[in-house]
Image (tube, rainbow over all chains, first blue to last red; front, side, top):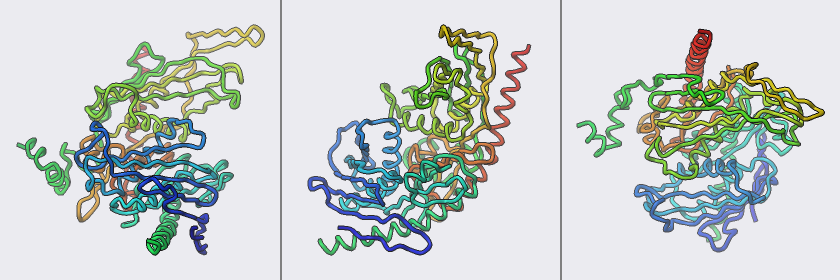
Length: 220
Length: 284
């Protein structure tokens, strides 16, 4: 199951494979592999939540991130927050007031670029669950290596030696920046170039989404 | 009258201001709030700072402790940051264990300090594998009126800049530790990381970039915690963070980078002036 992405000339992303409805009991689920990095996401909702966390204006998104090791840490809280805020920008929560949408993410394999894999997989699972969305989004990770070159979708070895890593998320409508998470030190010019390259590469991810949806729409 | 209008038509109230090129608190779009800084205000801490950016108030205190370094990093000391957002700083927070927002903001602040490399943890090591300093940097927010990360970074950096480490002698044979608090050496701080927050407000025809937003503006622009935060150390960027909220068009991004450069100069001047004044007082 899954589609091998065509390898373009200018950019090369790791091959992406995706399967919908991977879990049978959740409202929407997806498993996505980007290269060797794999994540499973399940989406449940809109459903009832306890009244203290209800919002009268929009649905409350809850994101749970489980690492392979299973021990929760502050870094996981941070990742959850990044993913939650990004999803909130994409989901039309005002259609489901006083409800909750739960997103559970399970890391399976991490060979670099786990955050962007989790973000993309979450977007696919939300699409699969049928929750109304304002737009989709695509996440791309890149690394700046010692010599200042930009590596898209870096491998684990690249990440270990990288001067900086950046993850950018773009929305599908205006292709503007939704989320940016960076680590390390870099100059302004490098930042702009990295952003432009990731921006261009995000088109490939959107194409992949489209292909996957087209394929599953036939099955339905 | 205006207060009632704000309650009945919150969106229109905000729009009316923005479309007249002014913000509800009377600032222009790129005007930052005044910064008030005071260092060494807490006498019980080794180093401390109180900062007010507009109404946002953050107190930072540093405590010192000796510990043995980690086995895998024998020549590194520790820098531990902790941010407290008590219920008193905003009606958004409940008393109890640290909220998610506090954890995330603290992680962000400590990430900025680590990424900017302004503190070399090797400087905190006294004897490799035996003894190293632990810097407990506790920050408490007394009033959260937006752009929290900016204020935290100013408070933390100013306290680190005033920190003077006592001399420690370590006897390798008897393992005796002798701390002499009278002879102190200032901690080396490389550069000066500065964070600047921006919010993006979407009018139907254009996007407005708002510098140094207050909590009310943050809420109007896509929720708390969705600021675009640019951190620079000298001329290098050491982090650009943005989590969801209104999306950011490329033109606004260019603008933000430019403004953050100017603001870094202002903040640098504030901290330098404050430290210079502090030195004068100490000499008298």
